[in-house]
Image (tube, rainbow, N blue to C red; front, side, top):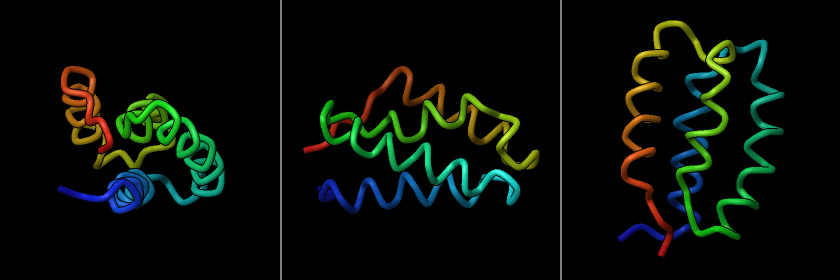
Amino acid sequence: MFDDENIIEKAMEFVLVRTKPEYLNEMVSILDELVVEARVTRNIAVLIELPTVQSRMIKPEYVDEVNTIKHYFGQHPLAMS
């Protein structure tokens, strides 16, 4: 099983590499706030679900992939250990 910090790092990386360069700083700020929420609620899915609602911030070639992941986490939340 992954440790919590490893999961957080991977989730943030997933979102950031798919973020348009002009929105990168804004997305980092959003993710920093969501890390706190993820730790409190013990639900890592907030790191992927909430920032990707803003599809304008996601590179066009990743929109379908991100929506698929978002849909999956909506049905199968990934709780941290």
